[in-house]
Amino acid sequence: MRIARFATDEGMSFGVVEENTVAAIAAHPFGDLTFTGQRLPLADVRLLAPILPSKVIAIGKNYADHAREMGGEAPAEPVLFAKPSTAVIGPGEAVAYPRRLSERVDYEGELALVIGRMCREVPASRAADVILGYTCANDVTARDLQKKDGQWTRAKGFDTFCPLGPWIETEVDPADLAISTTVNGEVRQDARTSQLLHAVPDLVAYVSQVMTLLPGDVILTGTPAGVGPLEIGDEVTVTIENVGSLTNRVVERE
Image 1 (spheres, rainbow, N blue to C red):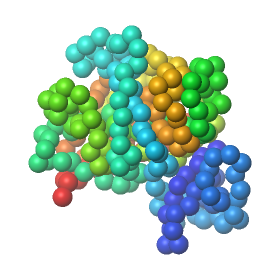
Image 2: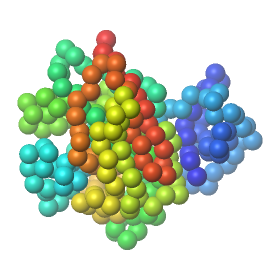
Image 3: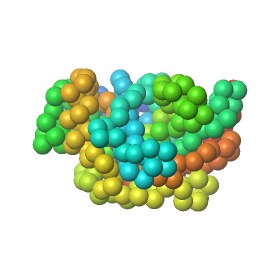
Image 4: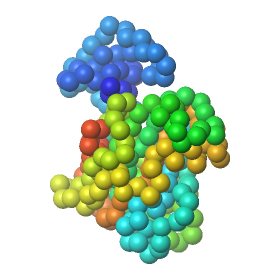
């Protein structure tokens, strides 16, 4: 099932995408779904970020080849950092390049998971019970600021630096999915989630030992090798097998 958040002239709703239509649901997508009876052509709605999380927790250096390209070895335990909820944008929205502050902004295509219910200290064996589903993410990063600051908050936290979408796929096994990133149609990243150093269940267990996770919270699982710079005017697309594609264009921040 593909759960989307969408906008029309009448406002914002959640719905289930079925082929070329969206069946609207009442309230939120957590728990049992109640359909309103409204059904709209997918072409007539604007897809938004599929969720507005209270927090986005990301995992650094979770593919060995990416850790090497960043000049280091893979860490023994997951490296956690956070992106603010204000960084989240949806499919088709613009990534704003903060030219006055950064001269190097990179794409990082990732599989993201969305938490479905409040939880803490979740055993890895029960992680699937607390996951609503999966979506595509782009962990946009001001690489020069990341190196300059020595920590990642500013580099990862700009408004628009966390595109998510196009929807939440609830019926997919995250263990071995193809993931790719293209810039202007050219493949820059090409990997499989089976290459994750710390798999999805282990990440949920690890993060939930630290903090309570709320419905809608997002965990970015890490990016494979091939990260690189974006320029103003570029179109970047993250595609994940059996999930979907997320496309955003880069513009200059006003």
